[in-house]
Image 1 (cartoon, rainbow, N blue to C red):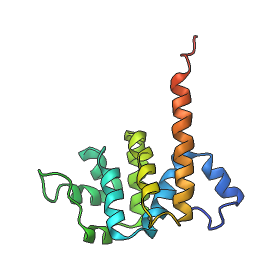
Image 2: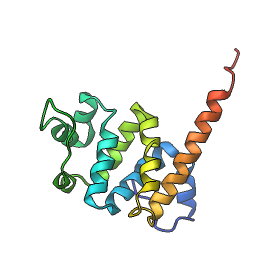
Image 3: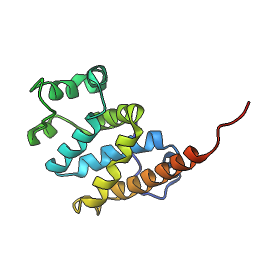
Image 4: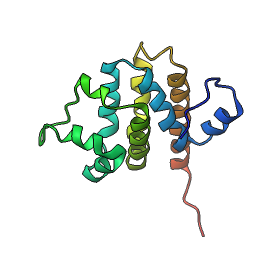
Length: 150
């Protein structure tokens, strides 16, 4: 998957933003790439939480499974140096899996993005916050609709 173009008003960016299932992982990878190590560990921890063993093994050649079960059977305990092993492409793959398992987990990252002053100046973070807000609002609207009758 190619990252978003650097100019946020290009046609390809606009098309991508209409596909949150694709745009969210791409934007999360860009945010991760720009974030300092402590914020990276927070992002990885959030994305890894909903995934089971098989998902962690299947994503990015199993790098997340090795990190998760390094201190097994204890709780997930990522270290700052772990972020040196993980690149943006692995984060994109992790985000894709995480949103398939629990879109709410990914949407909850909006709070993390808006509270982190380091990330406030990131164009990718700002786009991601808007996209997550819109996606959550659409889901809430869909939840209120009566079921279709056939």
